[in-house]
Image (spheres, rainbow, N blue to C red):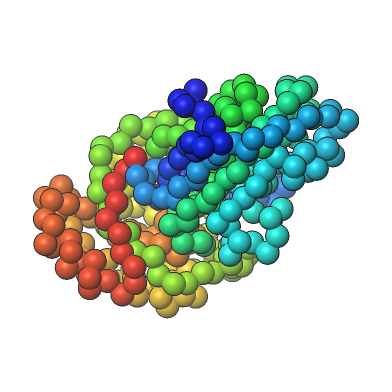
Amino acid sequence: MIDNLPTAKVPITRLSPAKINLFLHITGKRADGYHNLQTVFRLLDWGDYLHFSLADESITTTTQGILEANKLCAQLLTLAGADAITVSLEDNLIYKAAYALLGAAIKANKLPKQLPQVCIDLDKHLPMGAGLGGGSSNAATTLLTLNEIWQLNFTQDELIKIGATVGADVPIFIFGQDAIAMGIGEKLTAIGLPDQHYLVLTPNAHVNTAKLFAHSKLRRDIAPLSIQTIQNQFNDYVQDLEMPYHNVFTPVVTSLAPAVDQALQYLRSLEKVAMGTARMTGSGSAVFLPLDANQSRDKELLTNWIASAPCPAYLVNNL
């Protein structure tokens, strides 16, 4: 449960964390057009912030069918700080998450007769299109928080199913811990990993995800690994990245986006000192380097690495 639910004067603030993919494989294409993936998600202590506050007024709800959800969502939700993300409010993942939540509540006959209006203020820090899951994390944080504020009482598993209809990466943020992911990213198994520091670079580049998935050189036939194998072989992808673990999108993205290739080459030049393997997260454009414990404590060294980076650089930890 959320402590100290917001009043009109006292909003609550939630971290909407970033994620990285320690590796990312495509194991095949599905009949529905999506691709089956295998990856390990790691959540970070760095991300956007969402501020939730209640208006003085409540809305009387109706249950005349699922089509009422959009009208109800427009009455209940005010979103600030997201004007530059999408042209229309309805296209924003925060709004889509609220709409999906209300639709599920109507369908399950769980909608209270009165719901408070909520203002969500997005404090954006994560770059868009970076493979860090910013929009999906915003959606998940919205689902989790509104579920509590509106007292809809959906379980985590139910919220994961709702989140999967909003976006493939939304479930991991509802799950809320490091996980092995399969399917389109919705089949999650918790995994315990050692604490880690990362140097993350965010080059100013974006390659359309649909274009990447359609690229002729993208590998879509990686042999699937069992959950037990991935759990047992974590030393092969946590600090270093040993075959068969890799990110299938890296060669495609670096060939299409020189800024990503430059950022990745910069991190590779630091690998011997950092004692880790640089890699790309998701379908890019962000890249990261796991740091050895000794380097993560060397403030002068890290300051120099950040200052010398060819694009914005951040020192972050796992969540």
